[in-house]
Structures are given as C-alpha cells and as structure tokens.
Figure 1 (tube, rainbow, N blue to C red):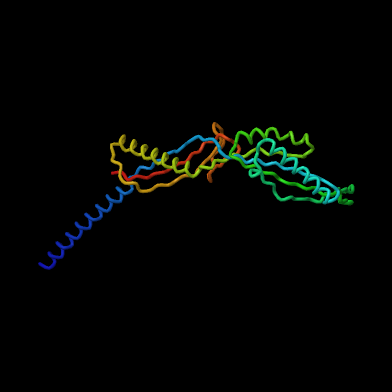
Figure 2: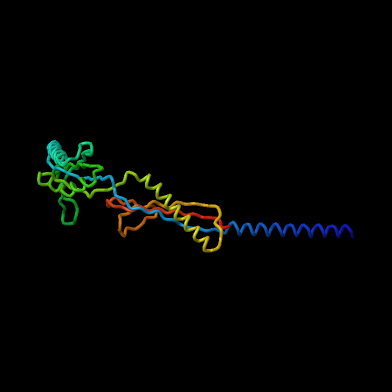
Length: 244
C-alpha cells in the first residue's frame, strides 16, 4: 500500500515537472517567432563618368585586295576625323576586320534556286571610343554624319554610359538602406509598445540602375541601364528583428 502511494506521488511530481517544461518550451517557441520584418531603401541619382561610343564602316569590292585597300583608306579618314575633334589615339580602338562573300541569287518560278553568282567581298570593321570626357564624345557622336561627306560609309551607334565608382556607391547605398530599415523597425516597435530585440536576419536585394525620371521597369535579376547619362540607383535591405 505504501509502495503504491509512493509511486503515485512520484508520478504526480513527474507530471507537474513535464507540464512546466512543456509550458516553458511553448512560451519560448512563441517568443522566438515574435519578430518584426522591415525593408529599407537606398536610393541616389548620379551622372555617368564614362562613355563608350561605337560605329561601323564597310567597303565592298570584287576582289579582296581592293576591298582591304578601300577599307584601310576609310580607317585613316576616321582616324584623322577623330583626331581633329580632339580625341586621343589611346581612346580609339579598331576591331579585327570581318568579311563576307557576296552572291546574287536567282530563283525559279517554283521558288527553288536557279543560280548563285559570286559578286565580290564586303569587309566590315568597328571603331570603339571609350572616354571620360562624356560631353565631348556625346557631341561628336551626333556630328558623325560628317564622315559620310568624306565618302566613308559610317554607321553610328547610340553611346553607352557607365559609372566607374559603382563599388563605392553601392557601399554607401547599403548603409543608407540598412539605416532606413532600422528606423522603420524602431518606429513599428515604439508604436506597438514593444521592445526591439536583436537582429535575427538580414537580406540584401538586387542592385538596380535605371534612367532618371523614367518609367523603366525593375528586373528581378537587377537592371543596368546604359542608354542614359543621368541615372538612378536603388537597393533594398530586409531586416528581421526579435521583439522583446
């Protein structure tokens, strides 16, 4: 009888201890899930400090030798033109020459090829100007039709604009976005009469660069606009805080 009573007492104590431990664990679990999640934004406008302008030119001739000679003459005209505009030779790069064989094809009434006659060679070359004198190169790119008047078959592409200090800019923006997120978390906690605990997690969003004052869409993988000289960069930081 005494032994049975002792067993009942021990069992009761064990149940009380188990209930206490379960209750404490349940409370701690809920507490660990009580968090504040906020997203901060870093945003800045900047002006590109590097321009890349490309153009292509071509020559056609019945013989490869004549085509090369004509293309060489056009290349010298382009060099002289750019030099006269004040562009140093170190900023100018000519690509390797590419060429195609040209054929004149005639067809039968049913659409099949009747014959293909070789008509000559077309040679193409690309010139690239890379400079930190953005405004000057921008102006020259708009005047490049002057080369056509010299007999050069020149096709100008729209300039591309870059920024050489993106690494420094990104660090500054991450700090700004982190501060913004932290301030948001503090504001939420204060207005909810709660205490802001330790930082549990942080995630950085993608770096986006778009044209200033544009309706350009953001990309999931990050946008990188090169068409506009004046740009806007953004980055987001997500912070998760424990609530005390």
